Image (cartoon, rainbow, N blue to C red; front, side, top):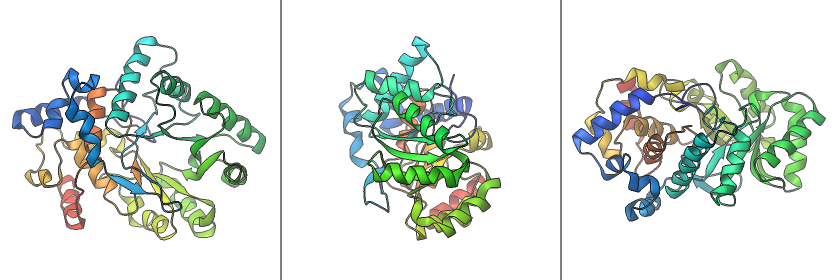
Length: 330
């Protein structure tokens, strides 16, 4: 299962991505796109792949100055495979390739079925547990229930004493959980705390929190893409002005963007900032917003993973080019 659909970090696009890769190869654009379908890249046997980390786009977290890669990895649906050994083996390769290409940020949630457990197990199996920048969420009502859930999540992620980011998922019982998150952050269990949404129905509540209690929030996770720009009109700027990092879910709008460009070649001018596939076009639009710290597309396909990671390397579009990108999608 490609798993690129649903809300939060996951996005669809399997069939359209195949067309994109074929188009890229027909045009002979870029070594990375060609490498995306080679076994050597997936095995890590290519020196050029190992060196591909040198131009990874890094973004600074406002509250600390820490830099993280601008393209991370979501786990909604894609890592919810239970004990299926075949699927776990494929996901281990996704995780290795992600790390090999400079990726560090991984995001999960107790809402995502077995995703936390699978991610934790594979992080240990691949030897990457200490190299990953781990984010998850609390998604339950009640203080004691939230504490129990967070303890379980951290254990499943194989990081029982510390993770980088804990978020209140979809603002559920947000005031209660923020109290606990602040306490745990002070104790060193988290580096950062935050809130998430993937629905414009919650934008009013998000704005209210950013306005009233910005000092309590280090990260805002929110949907933003060429097809879902509403958060960029006000909320992203609010976060930036208040020193709050932004993690973007749904950067492909649940796969809708791939449907919008089906059968269309990339604009020629997209090559000027290193785009070799539509996925990179979409991701570079997202991470070039000055408020955005990182985006978390999800995939269980190693080829799509390589393609996505290309969206977090090289040059980013300037403001004038971003307007052209919006016009190209409509």
